[in-house]
Amino acid sequence: MKVTPTIYGDITESIFEQVAADFKADPSLLNYEREIVQDGRTTILSIEIDPGGGFEGGFELTTIVSKVRTKPICLFKIHHKGFLDEIGKLLGMQDVITGYAEFDEKVIVKTNDADRVKHLFEDSFVRNVFGSLANYTLGTTKQHLPNNPDSIALEFTIDSAIFNAEELRNIYTAFTMVLDNLEPGAEQ
Image (cartoon, rainbow, N blue to C red; front, side, top):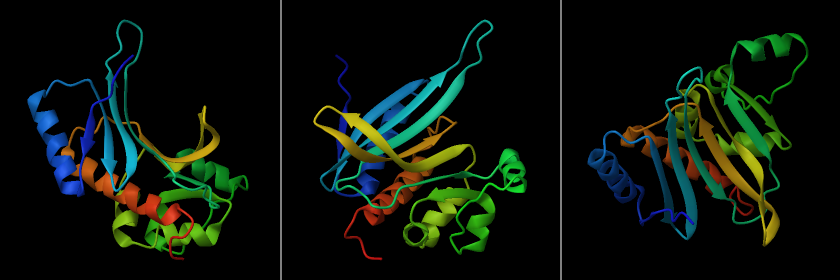
């Protein structure tokens, strides 16, 4: 059984000082996985590079996932707007407008609660981080855990191996801000 190393930290800066040290210790990393425990919450950070071989193409992937502590009422998924989305809009595909014009131009949002999603992305830092990325998804997803089959997680996935600790810290910070606002009881 594989044991994932854990990073404990009260503040994000100290967590990502450790992440940066890990990256510096082995600059040829192809895989990196850590449990990050902060504010009583466990978040999994995973980075993978598969260079492929022969006729196989490789891939790169960075994932951040954390269980939502309480079942959220708002379910959503966003991704960077691409060419196929433009075709989909011509064919009638709908996406939620958050009310932040520059952000809305860059992303497609699907949700069961448009007002709540507007709240999730009201912070300009969060919008700037997720508006600047491409080839990613961020949203709620069901996790099938033995002791809680209906648990919900927030998951971020990008088709890139992000080994820049500062960039990763910004994404993690925006991710946790969305997660904090997603849980019931967060101010609306």
